[in-house]
Image (cartoon, rainbow, N blue to C red):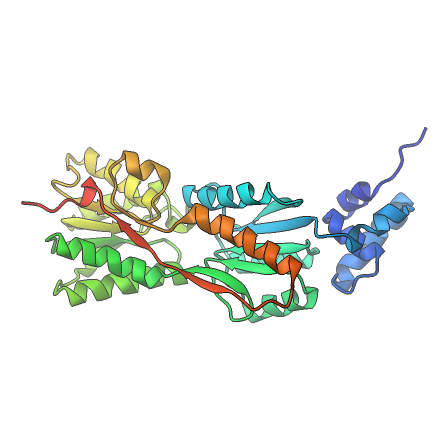
Length: 337
């Protein structure tokens, strides 16, 4: 007996989501002509004859949401995605994770939505340009932004300027004067705002910033928010003869790499160099690493809760939330006697 062709076979042949096939079957306006043609070609090739139940897919309650992230292998995004997963498990929804990559995530994200759109989107740390905004408006689905802001969407946005300012102020108040900063490799609004806040805190505290003590690693993985980048940054500072008394790192992963490099140089934390990270990932507690907490797990939960609210009423008022960073002071930035 010949195998019965299903909507899943069509989706696989066309390289699109099942929900996209169902939209094409229902002549939805929320699919690009290119995608419609691709799906129709697969239907014709496979000689697919949809049942009524398949045609009803797009008319039922939302089923599939997509979560777009630059990477899902870093501790930061792991923690956020745990919150997403735990909250989605309470709802009658499936979800897919789309990795846009840390190099040109905006363009990769645009290519993703051009292939067809799910029933809802949660977009992490990807700036929404006007071209992408227009396309999302055409699709008319709920979209929640996390780590980015745009006036047309619900969003949860971290105050990176304040986080950088808190970090700089903490190091100044603990008596450090030669203070360095490990930047990310790739310029972004996140790293730029943290650096701006850090610089302003040092200036307010009367501390002159030595530009030789601002450095990024060589490794491009995760845009430079990695252990390797933190390790390399210390080696570069050593070559410059510019090892600071205290060091603010763009995230905890960098800080962990920096601590390892310092130990290889025979330097201790915080006796020789104080280290301050960012994110408050789980392991930072066990390394006694001072850091800036961003409540990542909680934000993951809240993003799905907001998406669920918008499913129930698409016309509710936009909720645009600024997440306040919090200093978690531990041994790694202990003030010297």
